[in-house]
Image (cartoon, helix red, strand yellow):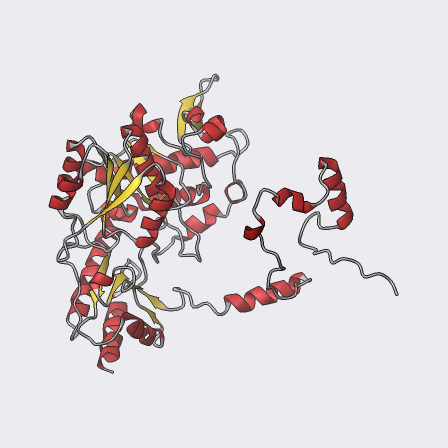
Length: 465
């Protein structure tokens, strides 16, 4: 009986035993296990992964993945009021057309002489973002807005040589987790209380918390819970009074109607570009921006790439890296902070969106979103037992809805909405238990009056059951 041959997976490179043996021989190792000797045995899995049998044909694999994806219910297939950092906006067709071009879609990293057009596209993106933010310098996009916020705080710590950041308590717990993970052990994150009636930062608590250790005060405007910080200038003034920097997270699509952070004293602005022409996706479609004034103390602390324009030896204009020597590409393991996965494709996409919209378009979309959100708040607040908005403050496009007076949990209400093809907002009852049975709803330019009326009507039925 012929000897059974070892299984070689067609999708895993260098899986043939003969190839593996040759590779081990070339590097002088007796077995693959030698590569893991430094990892304690107790931390290594001692048995095969509990996985199903492999699919050996591309047709089978495609059918399997198609069946899995068919179980998803997307925001495009339902009436959705989800937000909380990832929003359903209209994406103009030109955004998808440009980011699908091969020279952008397939290029990951390269130089200005190989990635023709990419540097200019990112320079134009940064220029339009800078104009909107009223800042001079904008980086190439980081992985997402959470990373941008964490990096901005690390920059502030290096600039001030301090080790504590003060953060308002209404921050997303996902983002807060990222800040803790990314900033430790060099920078401690201290959470500050907020006013339960308005959601605003408690200025007395802030003043008491400020000290010679404070590197930065971080808040968001619009906030994660939707309201606007009406005392933003007082917050930045208090930060500056002890030599700390003011770092402000902002939704860029709000800047057509709201003042940019720089106008009320922010030293560093940051956020996520997903609202700018990028579809909602299953974990993707995000890119973080950081913006500052054009001062060496700020520019030299950016870990990410910056793109600029300069004359060439031939007297033409070219696009390339600015202060490349400050990055981890130059310093390697001695860098202040590493350049992570960039989201250049989404930066180019956001640039296309901004160029298409222009200042007037950004004003109109921001005004439209505020008006629609205001209409939605009035409709929901009229429902028996519903309190909307939960905070007494101006809002942009998101707002907290409280269901404590209804006698049902948010989970029960949202489950019933799903039966009607409606995605309610994000359930906040676990993230912010002090808010009771509350949820965060988002309204954008895609929501017409009939959509909001339908939500109110179905909610009325669900509440009455």
